[in-house]
Length: 263
Image 1 (cartoon, rainbow, N blue to C red):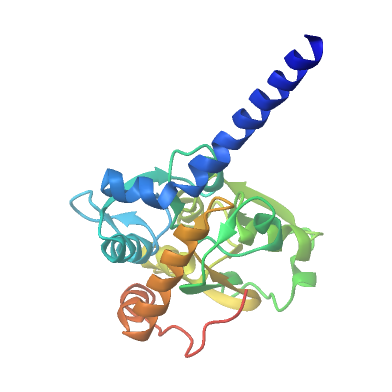
Image 2 (cartoon, rainbow, N blue to C red):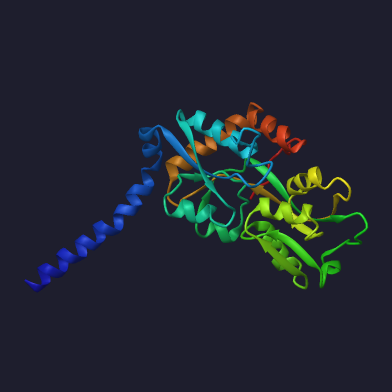
């Protein structure tokens, strides 16, 4: 009797453990059955995600997510996130995918999967013209602003070890701090610098040096092979027909690379 009870308990545990895996494997079916793609998008990260004059979501990743939803034959539902909680929202099933200029990194690969890259983003150090900075060594002892939990934060932490890293919870707050002069040096993206300079016209920032070039991609939970294949088909299709490049150029003023870098 005891042996039968143990076997029954073991079987129950095995079935219970399998349920999350089954749920994950069926995400693409769930999206199509629901008729909506829940995409986690950071609307405080211009030009990737932001709000227009009518408080409507816009930006390159917003338009890219709409393209993806169209490719899947469903509507887009935006799940608003910040840089630090993009991945937690995905892992807790508050979103089906992350479409938020999510750079591919080895650390992130340990907890989530990535589709093929559909964009690129540089990590740069920027400061006003009269600030003499040519390398990470020149940042020693200086306040350097970045956004918490991003690959920019990672590069700032690992490469500018002797700087005083000042972390903000989202890109919008980072931009405000730089516009107000609370901080004058940043490690972030050229797009963030452009957003700063739109409002900091008297003393704009300029690129001092590039720390890294990162491809970014749609993030999804591990084990979602069918969803990953569908997203990769979208990337291949809309890179080839120029739709993704048109969106990227509209918001970044430059073309995507002729050949996307391998993550």
